[in-house]
Amino acid sequence: MEELQSRYRQMEERITCPICIDDQIRLVFQCGHGSCPDCSTALTVCPICRQAIRERIPIFV
View 1: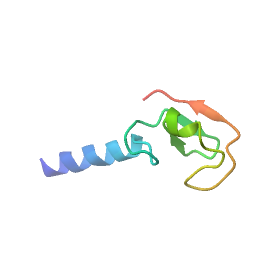
View 2: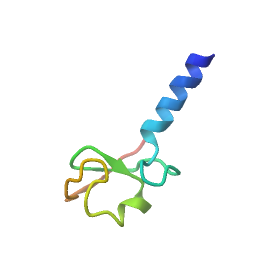
View 3: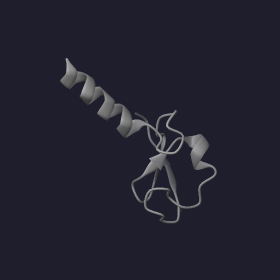
């Protein structure tokens, strides 16, 4: 049971916005990192790798 809970937490972490930690990642940048739409609007560079954001690609999880 602990292993399942651990896997569930890992999956949640992968799809949770790294900025607000509330919403799911719904947009991916050209660098491969992403965020939720609300956080994305304020960004000009990726908060993970600092590359300039030129494109926001919607994803559906």
